Image: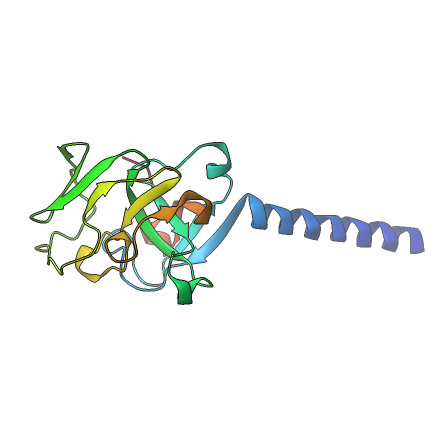
Length: 176
């Protein structure tokens, strides 16, 4: 009887350790706070996050990523934005349109509002090595790379793979 209880406790502890390992390094879940990614994501959407993706390769243009923002007083927060340009890309925001390497990006995922130019500090340049340029899909209501600059790839904690809640809005996200 005691042997069986010890075996159950051991199995339970192994399951907890494996679960914690997978949640820490392989996958996780998050809840969207705010509307900076609207209409793609809504406030309180629940997402499945792939935390292992960027151990294998760097982010791609179009990926929706979770990251620690390069803002001194907000290092304990996580932001969610879309990768617009990756290292070596030349980007420019001109008249509300985004150009990467001289080609306009077709963005069906934005909300279609007229772009409000707010004299952002970063609207053109070349993305440095091991960095990405990110924007929220809700361009007129997003604190993103236009405000705080490039995001180090090492600050990215995962890639949003699926919206899992609300159930009627389940979605798989793709890069392009």
